[in-house]
Image 1 (cartoon, rainbow, N blue to C red):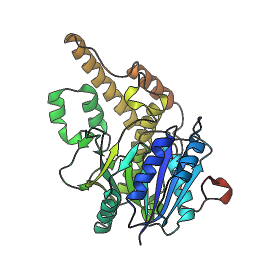
Image 2: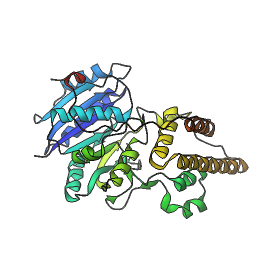
Image 3: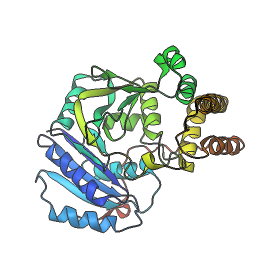
Image 4: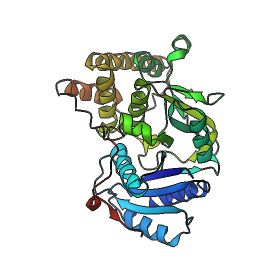
Length: 339
C-alpha cells in the first residue's frame, strides 16, 4: 500500500481545518500514512478546538491522525515544513507528501487521481489539483512563472498589451488537459518525498505568498516537472486565514515575499526592473481610469508601499535561503494532542 503524509496547516480556522482533514481521510481509502493537523501558533483556542474535534470524530483505522502545535507562526512554508517533518517521523515510508489548505475540501477521488498521475509520469515531482470555489468558479490553479513581461501585463491591464504578451500572462486558468505548467497552488499539492529530499522543503524566508512558486521553480531547475491535473478537483473557500480578497491595504509580508522571490531567483537588478515595470504599468492604468472617469479599485497606497519597501530592501542584504532538508525531527519538538 502506498503511504502518504497529509499536512493541513491551520491559523485561526480550526473547524475548517478538521473538515479538510476529514475530506482527505475519506479520499485515502486506498492509501496508508498519516494526517497531520498543525496549528501555526494561532492566538485563539485553535489548538484545543482541533484537538477536541479530532478526538470526537471518526477516522479510518489504517491512518494515523495527529494534532500538533508548531509553537511559532513563522508562515505557510515553516508551518508545513514542521508538519512534513512530523509526518515523516510517524510514517517514514511515505512515498508522497500532500499539502492541503485548511479551507479546502477534496473530492473523493482527488488524491487517488494525483497519485496515479505521478505514478504514470516519473519525471513529475509535484502535481496540483483543479481548485474551484464554493459556487464552482475557477480559482486559477496553474500559472506561468512571474517575470518582467508578466509584471507589466498584469499592472497595465490593457487589451493590446495583453494580446501581445499572451504567452507571458501569469494565470493559465484551466488548462484543457493535464500536463506541465510553471507552478501550481499550494492549496492542493502532492509531491514526491524523494523530490523534497533532493530540492529541500519550502524556503522559510517566505512568510506568505510566493513560497510554492519558489518550490516549483527549484523543482524545474533540478530537472523535474510540475503538472496540473485537471481530473483532480478540490473545493476551496479561499483566503479565509489571510483575508486576501478583503485587503484594504497590502500587508508588508506580500511585498517582502515578492522582492525576495525575484532577487533570490533572478538577482537584484531583475527585481528592480520588475518593480519599475509594475510602477509604469500601474500609473498608465490609473491615468486611463481617470480619463475614463472610472474608480481605481484595489488596495490603498499599493505603489507607494511597494516602492518604499523595495528601496529599503535594496540597501539590505538578501536573506540566505533557509531551505530545510527532509529529516527526522527531534522528539521534544512535537507537542502532540491526539494519541
